[in-house]
Figure 1: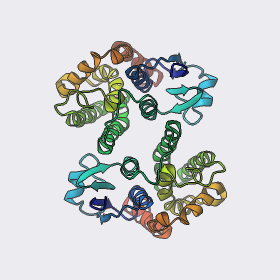
Figure 2: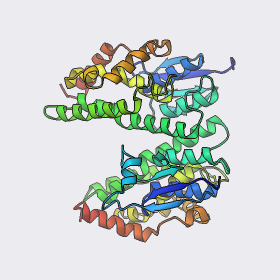
Figure 3: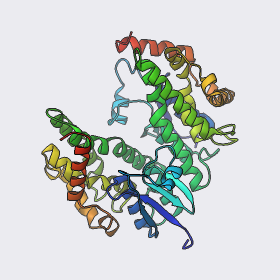
Figure 4: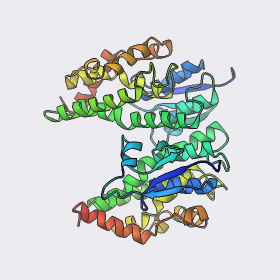
Length: 220
Length: 220
C-alpha cells in the first residue's frame, strides 16, 4: 500500500475537496494535494481527469481518476477499509447514503442562496437554510456524530460545509448555535478531531472569500 | 429469503420507481407494488416512510423504509447480491456511480426542460438534452450495456428515463435515433430484457401523461 500514488486536485476553500482530505486522513493515507487556480487557468491534468465537470476534487489513485466528492469518499472507504466510514449493514449504509445525499442536495446550495440574495430574498433564504439545519438536527438526534460514536460517512460529507456557515451567518443575520444548537455542538466535537481540524479552513477567510465572490457576481 | 416482505410504493409512470422494479426483477425478488395516487392524496404509509421528500419510490423491506431510487438500487444490490449490478472492483464501482450520478443530475431535468419550455426556449432545451445524450454515448462507447456485457447499475438507473424520450421528441422536434443512435440501439437492446420490458411504460401513454402535466402547469 505504501507504493500507492495518491494525488488530490484541490482548492483550499472547496468543501468538496476537504471531504476527500478528511477521508484520507481518517484512513491514514498519505497524499499530495495539488492546488488548482479555479479563478484563473485550470491545469491540463484537471481538464483531462475530470472532462465532464472540470472541477475539483479529483482523486488520482495510481493514475486513475475518481470524480465527485461523495463518490471519492466511498471509493476511499472501499480501497482502504479501516476504519470503516459506512456502517456494516446494508440498511445502515442506505440510511447514511440518504443523509449524505440530502446534504449534497441542500446544504451548499441552500447556504449559497443566502449570500447570493438581495433585499427581501435574504430572509426567505435564511429561513430555508435554518429549516435544512433543523432537519439535520433530527437526523443527528442525541448521537455524538451522524455515524454514532464513530466519525462516519455523513460526518465527513457534512463537516466541510460548516466552514462556510460563518459567512452565511454574516450575510443572513442569524446564529447557527441559536437556531440549531445540536449542529453547533456537533461542529465543535468534529473540530476536536485532528483529521478535521488540520484541513478545516478558517471561517473568517471563507467569509472573505465569499465577499470576493459577491463582488465578482455583482451582488455588492 | 422467502420470508422477506418487500413492498414498493409505486406510481406507474415514475422512472424512479421503475428503477427499483427492474433491480428487484433482476435479482428475482418477489414484491408487492402499491400504487400511490400522486395527483390526489398520498397514503399515510408514504408520508410516514418518506417524511423528508414524501415521494415514490419507497422500498419497505421487512418494514424498514429505504428512500431515493439510486440508493434503493444500491441497497437491493447489497441485500440480494446475485447477479451483481455493480462491478467487483472499487474503481469500477466509482465509475458506475459517477455515471449514475450524471444521469440523476441531467437526464430527467434536462428532458423536462423541453416540455416545460415555450417558444425559443424549446430549441435551447432540446440542444442541451441532445448534448447530454451524446455524453452518455461517450460513456457507453462500443459496449452492449453501460455495465459491459451484463446489465448493470448504470443501465438500470438510466433505462426507465428512456420511456419519457418519446414525449421529449414530440415536444422538442427531434429523434433520439438520429441524434444519438448508440443510445437508441442501447434502448432497443434493453427492451429485449424481460426485467425491463415487463415494467417499461408505453411511451405513448407517458406522452399523454406529459400532455396532462403541461395542461396542469398552464403550458398549453
